[in-house]
Image (spheres, rainbow, N blue to C red):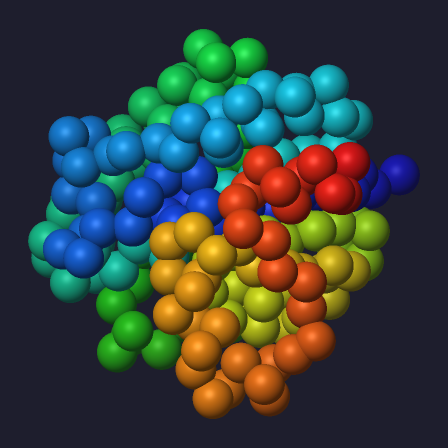
Length: 181
Protein backbone atom coordinates (compact mmCIF):
# COMPACT_ATOMS: atom_id res chain seq x y z
CA UNK A 1 0.00 0.00 0.00
CA UNK A 2 1.47 3.39 -0.97
CA UNK A 3 2.60 5.77 1.76
CA UNK A 4 1.55 9.36 2.17
CA UNK A 5 4.32 11.93 2.03
CA UNK A 6 5.21 15.35 3.23
CA UNK A 7 6.95 17.12 0.36
CA UNK A 8 9.06 20.11 1.33
CA UNK A 9 10.71 22.72 -0.81
CA UNK A 10 14.25 23.37 0.43
CA UNK A 11 15.18 27.04 -0.02
CA UNK A 12 12.82 29.33 1.84
CA UNK A 13 11.18 26.50 3.79
CA UNK A 14 14.01 24.64 5.53
CA UNK A 15 16.92 26.96 4.74
CA UNK A 16 17.13 30.64 3.88
CA UNK A 17 16.93 31.66 0.24
CA UNK A 18 20.03 33.32 -1.15
CA UNK A 19 19.74 35.95 -3.90
CA UNK A 20 22.89 34.56 -5.55
CA UNK A 21 21.94 30.91 -4.92
CA UNK A 22 23.18 28.40 -2.39
CA UNK A 23 26.54 27.60 -3.95
CA UNK A 24 28.30 25.92 -1.04
CA UNK A 25 27.59 24.76 2.49
CA UNK A 26 28.85 28.17 3.68
CA UNK A 27 25.72 29.69 2.07
CA UNK A 28 23.35 27.44 4.04
CA UNK A 29 21.46 28.95 6.96
CA UNK A 30 18.95 26.46 8.37
CA UNK A 31 15.85 27.94 9.97
CA UNK A 32 16.03 26.81 13.64
CA UNK A 33 12.23 26.50 13.78
CA UNK A 34 12.35 24.14 10.78
CA UNK A 35 14.84 21.86 12.54
CA UNK A 36 12.66 21.74 15.66
CA UNK A 37 9.53 21.08 13.60
CA UNK A 38 11.14 18.26 11.65
CA UNK A 39 12.42 16.67 14.85
CA UNK A 40 8.85 16.63 16.24
CA UNK A 41 7.71 14.87 13.05
CA UNK A 42 10.42 12.21 13.00
CA UNK A 43 8.10 9.37 14.07
CA UNK A 44 5.38 10.20 11.55
CA UNK A 45 4.85 7.04 9.46
CA UNK A 46 4.79 8.74 6.03
CA UNK A 47 7.74 9.73 3.89
CA UNK A 48 9.40 13.14 4.27
CA UNK A 49 10.83 14.26 0.95
CA UNK A 50 12.61 17.40 -0.19
CA UNK A 51 11.73 18.49 -3.74
CA UNK A 52 13.90 21.37 -4.87
CA UNK A 53 14.64 23.38 -7.99
CA UNK A 54 18.36 24.12 -8.17
CA UNK A 55 18.81 26.08 -11.38
CA UNK A 56 22.28 27.19 -10.25
CA UNK A 57 23.43 23.79 -11.53
CA UNK A 58 21.87 24.32 -14.96
CA UNK A 59 23.22 27.86 -15.07
CA UNK A 60 26.75 26.56 -14.49
CA UNK A 61 27.12 28.27 -11.11
CA UNK A 62 27.30 25.08 -9.05
CA UNK A 63 28.54 21.62 -10.02
CA UNK A 64 26.00 18.81 -9.74
CA UNK A 65 28.20 17.00 -7.21
CA UNK A 66 28.41 20.10 -5.05
CA UNK A 67 24.63 20.55 -5.12
CA UNK A 68 24.16 16.91 -4.15
CA UNK A 69 26.71 17.30 -1.33
CA UNK A 70 24.80 20.33 0.02
CA UNK A 71 21.59 18.30 0.03
CA UNK A 72 23.29 15.35 1.71
CA UNK A 73 24.78 17.56 4.42
CA UNK A 74 21.38 19.16 5.02
CA UNK A 75 19.81 15.72 5.48
CA UNK A 76 22.61 14.88 7.96
CA UNK A 77 22.08 18.12 9.90
CA UNK A 78 18.35 17.42 10.14
CA UNK A 79 19.07 13.89 11.38
CA UNK A 80 21.54 15.19 13.97
CA UNK A 81 18.78 17.49 15.26
CA UNK A 82 16.46 14.48 15.66
CA UNK A 83 14.51 14.79 12.40
CA UNK A 84 14.61 12.82 9.20
CA UNK A 85 14.42 13.26 5.47
CA UNK A 86 13.71 10.08 3.52
CA UNK A 87 14.78 11.35 0.10
CA UNK A 88 15.77 14.42 -1.88
CA UNK A 89 14.63 14.96 -5.46
CA UNK A 90 16.35 17.85 -7.22
CA UNK A 91 15.77 19.52 -10.56
CA UNK A 92 19.17 20.78 -11.74
CA UNK A 93 17.86 22.43 -14.90
CA UNK A 94 17.79 26.10 -15.81
CA UNK A 95 14.37 27.60 -16.63
CA UNK A 96 15.27 27.78 -20.33
CA UNK A 97 15.69 23.98 -20.42
CA UNK A 98 11.89 23.48 -20.28
CA UNK A 99 12.25 20.18 -18.43
CA UNK A 100 9.39 18.28 -16.83
CA UNK A 101 10.89 18.38 -13.34
CA UNK A 102 11.32 22.10 -12.68
CA UNK A 103 8.44 23.29 -10.54
CA UNK A 104 5.73 24.29 -11.48
CA UNK A 105 5.98 21.15 -13.62
CA UNK A 106 5.03 18.05 -11.60
CA UNK A 107 7.98 15.83 -12.56
CA UNK A 108 9.84 15.85 -9.23
CA UNK A 109 6.71 14.89 -7.32
CA UNK A 110 5.75 12.21 -9.82
CA UNK A 111 9.26 10.72 -9.78
CA UNK A 112 9.27 10.69 -5.99
CA UNK A 113 5.87 9.00 -5.90
CA UNK A 114 7.03 6.29 -8.28
CA UNK A 115 10.40 5.72 -6.61
CA UNK A 116 9.05 5.69 -3.05
CA UNK A 117 5.56 4.24 -3.59
CA UNK A 118 3.77 7.43 -2.49
CA UNK A 119 0.06 8.09 -2.76
CA UNK A 120 0.05 11.68 -4.02
CA UNK A 121 -3.61 12.26 -3.14
CA UNK A 122 -2.85 11.48 0.50
CA UNK A 123 0.21 13.73 0.54
CA UNK A 124 1.08 17.33 1.44
CA UNK A 125 3.34 19.87 -0.27
CA UNK A 126 4.78 22.84 1.63
CA UNK A 127 6.63 25.52 -0.29
CA UNK A 128 7.42 29.20 -0.27
CA UNK A 129 6.46 29.86 -3.90
CA UNK A 130 3.37 29.66 -6.05
CA UNK A 131 5.29 27.25 -8.30
CA UNK A 132 5.38 24.78 -5.39
CA UNK A 133 1.59 24.93 -5.07
CA UNK A 134 1.16 24.68 -8.84
CA UNK A 135 3.46 21.66 -9.10
CA UNK A 136 1.61 19.90 -6.29
CA UNK A 137 -1.74 20.50 -7.95
CA UNK A 138 -0.44 19.34 -11.33
CA UNK A 139 0.86 16.14 -9.72
CA UNK A 140 -2.39 15.47 -7.84
CA UNK A 141 -1.02 16.11 -4.35
CA UNK A 142 -3.96 16.28 -1.93
CA UNK A 143 -2.90 19.34 0.09
CA UNK A 144 -0.60 22.17 -0.91
CA UNK A 145 0.22 25.24 1.11
CA UNK A 146 2.72 28.03 1.42
CA UNK A 147 4.86 29.50 4.15
CA UNK A 148 5.73 33.18 4.40
CA UNK A 149 9.44 32.50 4.96
CA UNK A 150 11.77 32.69 1.98
CA UNK A 151 9.91 34.16 -0.99
CA UNK A 152 6.49 33.50 0.50
CA UNK A 153 5.49 37.05 1.40
CA UNK A 154 6.55 38.40 -2.00
CA UNK A 155 4.87 35.55 -3.85
CA UNK A 156 1.58 36.12 -2.04
CA UNK A 157 1.49 39.72 -3.31
CA UNK A 158 1.79 38.69 -6.97
CA UNK A 159 -1.39 39.04 -9.06
CA UNK A 160 -1.15 35.37 -10.06
CA UNK A 161 -1.55 34.39 -6.40
CA UNK A 162 -5.27 35.10 -6.70
CA UNK A 163 -5.47 32.82 -9.74
CA UNK A 164 -3.69 29.99 -7.91
CA UNK A 165 -5.74 30.40 -4.69
CA UNK A 166 -7.17 28.92 -2.56
CA UNK A 167 -4.41 27.43 -0.45
CA UNK A 168 -3.50 27.73 3.20
CA UNK A 169 -0.68 30.05 4.27
CA UNK A 170 1.40 29.78 7.45
CA UNK A 171 4.19 31.97 8.78
CA UNK A 172 6.74 29.15 9.10
CA UNK A 173 7.21 25.45 8.52
CA UNK A 174 6.89 24.92 12.25
CA UNK A 175 3.48 26.62 12.31
CA UNK A 176 2.29 24.65 9.27
CA UNK A 177 3.33 21.31 10.73
CA UNK A 178 1.77 22.16 14.10
CA UNK A 179 -1.56 22.72 12.34
CA UNK A 180 -1.30 19.66 10.09
CA UNK A 181 -0.02 17.04 12.53
